[in-house]
Image (cartoon, rainbow, N blue to C red; front, side, top):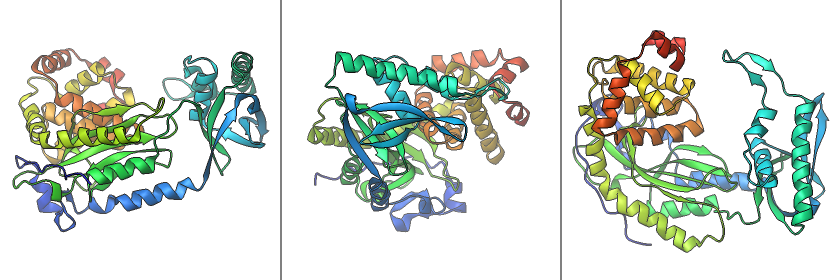
Length: 418
C-alpha cells in the first residue's frame, strides 16, 4: 500500500458547545464527530455488505437491438410499460425509460418523457390532469420508432440492460458505457483513507454517494473543531460520474448537520470508452492526497466569510437574494431560510453574515433528500468562495426586496417564521 496521507494541522476553536453538550467519539478515533452522530456512520465493511446484498438480486444483459421489444400492459386499468429481455418482461423505472428515449432518439432531450408520465399540477400543487393510456401510447410510438430506425440503420447495435429480480429494469445503456464497479471504488477509497467512516451514506448497489470521515490517525491538531472528509460518488447505471472531492466540516451535531462544509478540487470521470482502472485509481489517490494537506487553508477561507457581514438588510432578504442569484427553487429557498431561523434561535446574532448563509445552505440539504443534499453541499462550497464583489451584489439586491418578492421566493410558512 502507498504511504499514508500526510497529516494536517487544524485551527480555530469554533464549536465548543458540541464538545461540552454531546461529547465526541475520540475513543473511536474521531475526535471531531459527535458521540450522537458516530453510531449513524458505518464502516467500510458494512458499506460493502450493503452492496453485496443487492448484487445477488440483479442481472445484466447485453442485448442485440433485434431482440428487444417494448410495449404496454394493463394493470388495474392503468398503463404500465414493459421491456422484453431474454423471454422475460421487466418494468422500466423512470431513469431507464428516460435512457431509452435518449438512446433511441439520438440524444434528444428526455424532458418530454417525464412530462408524459407525470401527473400535471398547478402552482398550488393541485392536480390539473392525470396521465392516461393515450400519453403512454405516445411514448410507446416514439420508442418503437427509435427501435425501427436503429434496426434499419445499425442492425448490429447492442444495449446494456440492468434488471432486478423484483421485475424492474433500472438501466438502458449503450454498449460503449464503461461501468466502474461500486465495490472496486469503495476498495480504492479504503486503501487511501484507512479506518475512515462512511457518513450520510446514500444510494444502493447501482449508485453510491456520501462522505468518508478522515480518522484522527491521519491528521493532527489541538485547537480545531474542524474535521476532514472526502465526498465520493459513483454510479454503474449512468446517473453520475466517478466523483471525489476533499472537504472539511465543523463538528457534527446530533442531527447530522455538517457545519460550514467547503470542498477542494474535484475529480470527475465519465463512464465512456475503455477506463484504465489502474490509472483511475492513481488519479483518485492523487486528487485526495494532494489536497488533504491544504485543508487548513480551506478552514481559514471558511472562517473568513464571517467578515462578510450583512449591514442594513434582514437575513430573509439576504437569503432571498442568494436564492435568486443561484436560481434555487421555491422549496429549496424555503428550506435554507428555515435552517437559518433554526440556527439563529440557538445562537442569536452569530449567523447574520455569509457564514450564516453557508451553514443554512448545507443544513437545508439535509432536509431535502439525497440528490438535493449533494447539490446543496456544492452550493455551500461555492458560497465560501464568494469574493467581495459577489457579496456586495447579494447585499445590494437584498435591499430591493419587498413582500411580493418574498412570496415569490419562499413559502408563506417560511416568510412568517422569519
